[in-house]
Length: 452
Image (cartoon, rainbow, N blue to C red):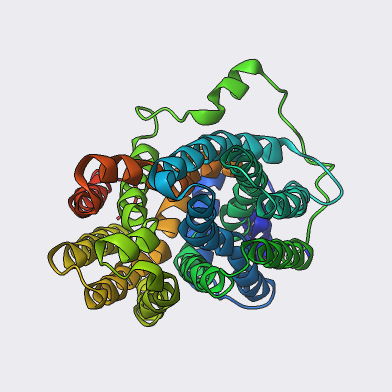
């Protein structure tokens, strides 16, 4: 896709205003200040934005792009890594999985904001995002193949780190496409689509990995090919733009040191959005990341758990689709984000109560239904909320890289935390911990002031 008209709204709006009024670029003393006129024009245009043409194309291509990333985060930490670790050392599977995922989480935490900062500064014929999306997917695919051939816990840990590094190089620039290209007034709809595909990718990854679990090596090969194709198509058809003529600020060591830091005093809304997302995601994945072991040992299904895990994952899809279809556009329509984020976080907490008090396969199905409803609505609206509290309009990828730590880190570190909880309190201890984190996540967004 070629460059979007919305990529630089303030500049375009200023030109539109001058054409409409027949005036020049300079204001006179009898006219309102240029900034006020432009802001008023921008607000008026924002209210009239329709998702059509290039914007509609971008929305549609976000679907396979998001799937290309999140099918991995569903399939690998939830199914393939636990199975692989269990096959290599059944007696120490909980402790070993905690070690592997902790190391991978540290790599993810470091890499995404670094990749975002580098992407923001990149000037190339193909723009600042596409090279990292395609390059990261290519190296990540190779790392996935190597992971499938790993024959020791050490090799599994090393290859998992390479997978995390590669696909977090992808995810930082990928996430920046939303604030880069999408007007604020329709970000709720875009966020709903991205949220839906995030959940479909994650749940689809669980189902796909479960179906392919008889050949872990083959499963990794399928994931590598699928992700590479989907992300390459996204990068090509969303129209990489030559940005070699754009100015680039000089590199300073102090800026590099700030890669992982956004001042919470100067930008409190960003801090609270980060905190809310981190808590909710950690609470959610504390249970989801251990679903296989929960079905095996907590519910008591034993070896039959692998065959039934896809049913639990599929149970979340109907409520997920409903939540995403309603919450994102509804949030845009009423101009509110926080009530949706709070309510969805509390629904996730309620879902986690069910298997705690009803430890059966049916209880896990009800958990999946409620969790799909809550987490789907959260995904749909929280992404839009986050895009409205970014501190620096010239560093979207860097800032999103920081805040996406709150989304990617829990998915990889939750098994590590869960492992410690299980070792200390048994599997039953996962649920009160997850409930507490989800409720705290709901409360964390209340202090945000710039977004209603």
